[in-house]
Structure formats: structure tokens, C-alpha cells
Picture 1 (tube, rainbow, N blue to C red):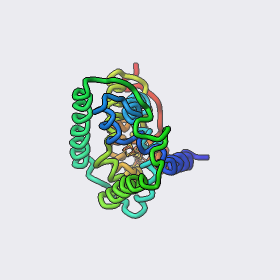
Picture 2: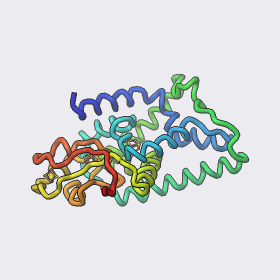
Picture 3: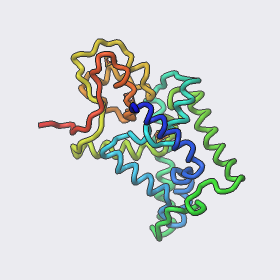
Amino acid sequence: MNRAKIRRILTLISLLLFPITLNFFSPYVSIDGAFNGIISGSVIVFILLFLSGLLFRRAWCSYVCPVAALSEYTEKINGKSVNRKRLRIIRYSIFALWFITLVSGFIIAGGIKGIDPFHLTENGFSVDMPLKYITYYLVLGSLFILTLTIGKRGACHSICWMSPFMVAGAWVGDKLNLPQFKIVSDHSKCIHCSQCDKVCPMSISVMKDQKNGSIMTQDCILCGQCVDVCPKKILSIKCQKRKTK
Ligand code: SF4
Ligand code: SF4
Ligand code: SF4
């Protein structure tokens, strides 16, 4: 089975499990926990995302996140590239607001009083009664509409509160010169066909970025679509340090 197929199956399973896992990704649950002095399951997931970023950069966005499958199905309706830099401003503004609220919550609660991974879930289930499906479909609908109107991975670029944790992890890992998974290129053999640009779900100019020998933008989710489409086979996913002796 090839990488693309494995990825499609994994993300579809993740999307089907979203009614169970929703609250473990929820910014609301983390804030509710913070105001009660509780480290909830979603805060634990955000910490794990930071740690995964150290080595895997943003691979989570390609292989695990439930929004990945939703985004890829929506891309078939609206597959236009997006202005990543402009959307990044919106995303980080939302993230900053949420993060300040989270920290304020813990301060107001008088610090961390406990850890409850299942906070606001029913024994680990997020959507445990028919009424909660309203919240679930509201979340799903918003993510769908954002992607549909903005373009490729529109929700990921504009509102994702999780990606900054991976970006921070990737940044720290890079500064510590840890080995990291990344797209590397034998750039001298590029024939500038731009096939890689066309397939990139994150609207990255792969053809331009690969000239540096590797794709180091924070937006690369290591999906490998550029690797698979390149007619010269000069792109690959490798685990390596930035500085090699
Ligand atoms: S950017 Fe956010 S919503 Fe999109 S795949 Fe990554 S973690 Fe999921
Ligand atoms: S640069 Fe390649 S691996 Fe990275 S997101 Fe784009 S297509 Fe996927
Ligand atoms: S697909 Fe390969 S050969 Fe074509 S522009 Fe991209 S890196 Fe260069």
C-alpha cells in the first residue's frame, strides 16, 4: 500500500472518530478546565503536539488530524491556492487571544489544582448524547464552510488553534538541531515543471522553496504529494538535522 492510500485511510478513520475525540482538541474545553484550575485532555493533546513537532514537524496534519480528511474532500470542490501569509495573521491573532484567556484562567483559578484528561467528556466520549451532535455539526460545518470559501485547507490556515503548537515544536527542534522529518531536494535536477506547486495542499511554492535543498516553511505538513508527483524524483521525505558536519 502506498503512502497516499495509508494517509487517506488514517485520516478517514480519524474523521469517523471525531464525535468521540472532539473534546480532546477543543479550545473551549481547555479554557473551561483552566478556569477550574484543571489541565484537561485538550491541554495534554496540545502539549503532545508541541513534542511531536520537535521531530515530526507538522506530520500530524497529514496523518492524524480529523480535519485533514474533511479538508481533502472539500478541496475537490474548491481547490484554489490561498494567501498563506495573510491568513497566518488571522490564525495567530485568534491563537494569541485564546492562549491569553487560557493562562488568565489558570491565574484566576489560583494555579493548577489537578489533571483530568476526561474533563467535559463522558468517560472519554465527547458526543455522548443526541443534543451534543448540534455542537458537533456546528464545528464540522464551520470548518467545512471556511475551507469551501477560502480554498485549500482554508480552516487550517485561518483558525487552527493546534498548528501553532507544532510550529513552535518544529522551531525549537530546528534551533536545537534535532533530526527532523522534512522534504529534501536534489534541487540542481529540477526542470521547473511546477507539478509540485499544483498538488501541494498547503499552497506552498514547492518549486521555489526546494531550491534551498529542503522545504522548511512552517506550513509543510509532510503529505508527500509533491514527492509522488515530481517527474524527476528529486524530492523525498528524510529525517535529518539542519546542520550536517
Ligand atoms: S492545521 Fe489544524 S486543523 Fe488543519 S490539519 Fe493541522 S491540526 Fe488539523
Ligand atoms: S511541500 Fe510537499 S509535503 Fe509539504 S505540504 Fe506541500 S505537497 Fe505536502
Ligand atoms: S515537480 Fe520536481 S521537477 Fe517539477 S518543479 Fe517540482 S521539484 Fe522541480
